[in-house]
Image (cartoon, rainbow, N blue to C red):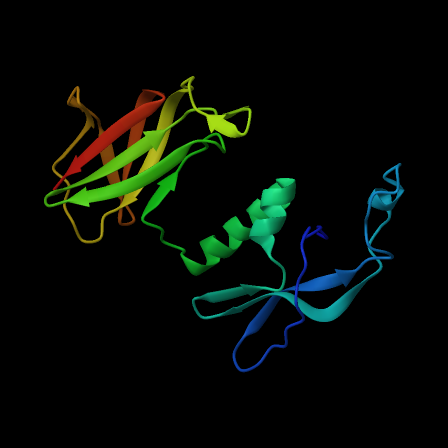
Length: 191
């Protein structure tokens, strides 16, 4: 599927065992503001032999600055492409989440004898030049899969309430469902 990269790029050549995963597609003309969006609806011209994305082992290279393109235009397609590349490079990530809003954040920290999963769900709003997070967003039935890494987990609970949660173990992951999270939840997984 053709998509716009919204940034400058460089021409690259493939060498060695590097694989080309995507090619640049030549437009009929570069998009710019014509006052009517007429360029926006033109189909692409033709696929070139110039790589847009190359991968060699654990290294991926984009010919264009996709992070700048995403920052400037908030293109969901660019986010999806990057997500697909991460999934290819890391087929067994440390943590997998069920469907969450794009503004939510999940991260894992570790201390001796336990791992902690932090779940944040606040909707950022622009207030002047600053993004503020004031209002929590309630999430329900959040599915979390945490890679075991040869560890046996003995107790899983929400802190600070110490509300125990049921879990299952399958394919090297512990699968947990958090019934409710109001803005922030801390999940503790003890070894």
